[in-house]
Image (cartoon, rainbow, N blue to C red; front, side, top):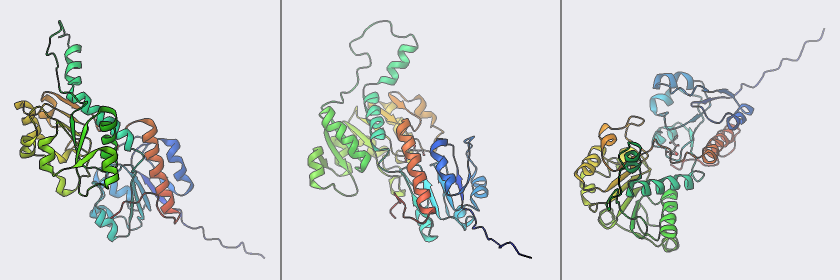
Length: 331
Ligand code: 8YV
């Protein structure tokens, strides 16, 4: 009698896809792992996330999923966290590093799309487009007036960019080359001379940037030291009538101080794509004058969002197949 050869199937890898994303782009994950996906796009509570992640080897997340020590301790098999974001403030990088969990993100593919929206918010805010549109829709436009929604010029003015990484530089190019603006910037490290010269960008201290710019735009990573970097004192240093644009993270700005500065009339306008505690938006900002608000859509074009998902999937597959990640987060 012959005995069938006993075979031991190698255990399948398991991946959590924590939010809904383009199903055709996510499909590749099924080649390398069993996928626990979230087609209804529900957002888990921390406890729900822990339950779904505890037996997983990899996770596809967005910035609605917080990766902290408590979660990591519950996930002993976890090898890789792949976030479909460039910002990584929702991830405890040190805790991941100490457990050997690789973190990947999606830089570069969203740079130009995010810069487009940042520049669009600058134009919309400085020229009061949102207030003007609401006024027209409300049927209040009954005659021309010399100062009706007369805002600030963008072309030829001075733009101060705080955070001169990829997105800051892409906005600087639009400002300098497209709108003839003078570009000032503040960054942890100065750019190489060649890049400064190509952009005509000049480095400034935070204080000098605030006092010398007609418009200030935030494009810096959200680290603990960046919390409320722009508070009442910094807003007071900005020029009367200046514009503030934020495409970074809401917590960088003290939103109450910002609402005060807009209501007092010191600040000319604000354009905000990000909010502290979003998707909740501080009620003061909802009623403040001359402010344009968008729901964190800076990277939201279809080609860019597809590219972000693709890169996040490629990173997951690479690590799970024992290859180096394409875009790891540098610790
Ligand atoms: C994301 C972003 O769309 O990449 C980032 O850091 O803020 C946006 O591009 C958003 O975080 C959703 O995950």
